Length: 466
Image 1 (tube, rainbow, N blue to C red):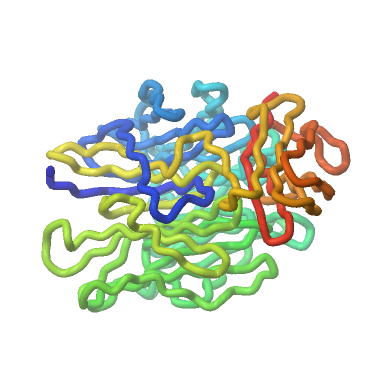
Image 2: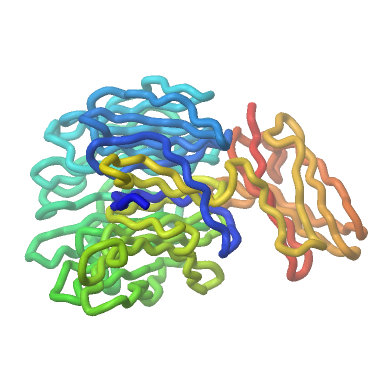
């Protein structure tokens, strides 16, 4: 067996998966030097992976077992991906300019360019809500040399003028922008690291009335240069973070959550104790469409060799953390980064050193396009045709007559259609015309249908294409 070392970025595009299931592994590219890949899944069930190689940015698309050709986007670094209505965006830096391209119908097209202060870009992040009807919540944040933090957003037109949010963070800010709930809608929030005074504090700032608020510390043991964030149902905020490296044990990894009501819950430590050298790092986190939280990190132990490198993967559902590390099949390596961008099965991408070559590798828990069903054999939900336009049919299977609540949710977790059904035993069908409760035609995108009858639930992804 070849010696393996791994440089990992993870994107968990997630629905529930059996705890015992090993992920399927696909090699989609290579690079002579490890870097942090990005990954997203489009409404057409296509995984897109982006990474750096020899000073250029490359992407590959995969649908099921089919891997499409590798695209060279030209000189660049720090690639990031996010979902948008009817497709995906790719952003990457070249000097002081951010290039943006759009993936629509299986091809990339130039979209736009964004600049801030014109200085070299040290890191960037991209977030989007994907299945919503507009670009609301599509945010670009980046750090320039001199440690200034910048922000731009996109609604239905071009990118807004770039805003300098902070002018001196003290080093390695790694800003991440997310939509946060406000009394009258959404507002952008940026999380970043402030290295002033050597404490590497994790801070956040919200834009309120066009003005960025004074930085507020994230409550709890939050800090260091490793952190990741994502938003969940009703724009709850979820973070994974390490502290600034102390004496050994070399670090701790924590999970923090701010509820939709604005309350921060007590921090949960996720560190797995191996020995006195415990050194978790390269943390990543994503929240899927059902509100499950996926956390991953790389952790070192004493000594050298494969037994001292561990990649941990845990899932939070219903207030309980479940160790899903075994699903990775023993892979391990540093620099992981997690995001949940789709209703699809959990997907992870990393750069793994095998026999002297770094391979850009994707692990997927189930084939792209798989449909969720209830674990119970007596209650199930199917959908056909899927994708659909303009109408599709849900098939509900019951063992006994029941009152069934059927809800349709967009990619941001908002319920857009609700039905209360009195159904007999056996299989019943219900048509849906792609409209919301007010009778408005919904935008193209990925939706989740969820049926509940008493304590039993079943769900299925459904894609509306126009």
